[in-house]
Length: 399
Ligand SMILES: *Cc1c(COP(=O)(O)O)cnc(C)c1O
Image 1 (cartoon, rainbow, N blue to C red):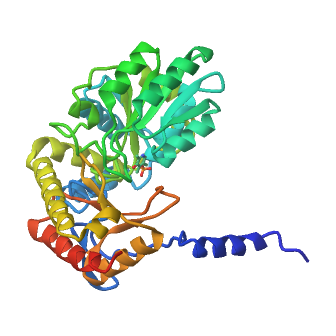
Image 2: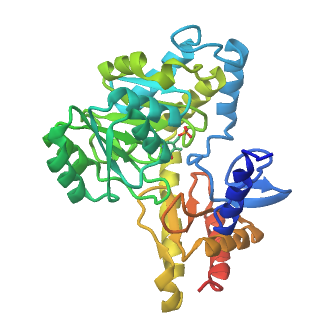
Image 3: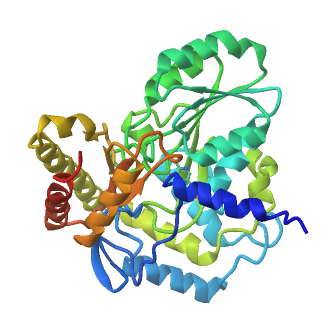
């Protein structure tokens, strides 16, 4: 009998051969700057918990209290029986942080992106998207049925040209960009993008997953970083990174939010955020606003890591300097590009053997393999020194 599933085994073999195979790694106990894996303590540079709030006792206490008061699940979609006072409070807190009229909380950032994009545009419309955008923006764009044109990463001449050539042939136009690019660490050129969008009557949607709680004076994200908070735009973000919980949001004008509540399928047809997740995110946002030293410490740590890494790289022989490249970063994500997937996997393992947990990122996630380090506010200088010492030893063997 022919087996209709036999192709699965073949596909897996192909993934192994290309060094593209992925598997999970188990972390035991609490998250934080040091984590336990297979019984060993590792200094953690692979977390999105930028402010170190996912193990904060106060945040946990709020989640436990919400569970006692409201139960473990929202028990329904928000429009039917799943809306709680915590959801309204959280949406107000997000709008306040972002400086917008309103906000809407989704059950994940991924769902926020696909629901919002499919609500805003359809087959009569045009999407212009940065080539390095997150998978959820790309997925939302293709689900919407709009014509999608990708422009080269942060290439505004190409974006301007695409607007000039194609904008007039479509009803609406939506420009999609990550705020901080998650696998690179650089920041989008938001003021220039907004200016171009204004000239061509295009909407702008920015994904602040890696910038909210990280960039800007109060941690409001890229829009604040560039002083663009009051420009009309669609500001999306997640509650699962700096805000230590689960869920996503869109912040913008009252009308935009009202429209999404009526037209975003991934908000309408899914269960509301759990009370524990909503309460944890609320507590995290409150901590960001009431103890600004966390944000200052995050920035200081990112600066220190960058300086130490650049020093280490400048000490390497010229041949190595040619293949090892630190990518430009203005965020808590710092990447060291290496030659190929096999090298990055080997480095990841060697660093782990030396007590450092770091992401080895390969194609197809990125075009060129890299070590991706993410900094937390709760790292100490000693943690960063340990990373640099381990890198010095491991990089010596790389060609
Ligand atoms: C993590 C991430 C998302 C998805 O957010 P979740 O809340 O984890 O679903 C969306 N966009 C970007 C840029 C991200 O990094």
